View 1 (cartoon, one colour):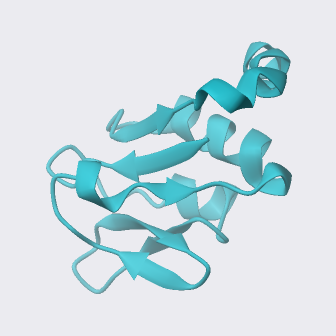
View 2: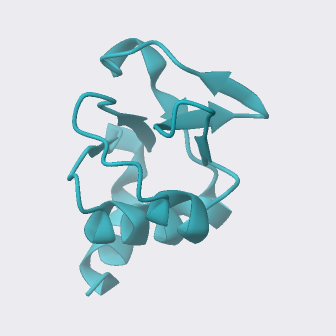
Length: 92
């Protein structure tokens, strides 16, 4: 699973950081970005900034996407991530 943020849609509420600080960071500009292994991927527009999500962060990332008021968190499920499909269904 990979995730990215469309910074043009980000409202800067920081709920994503609250849900999963391992994957989401908020910079001085007040906008959220994704991080992978501690490296901030800040290519605006996002698709060039896809961050891999570790299995331990999958549910938190899905929850963050669900509560995001800007609806700016985009998730790509890899073909090999079929085992994650049940986790997607558990996010309410």
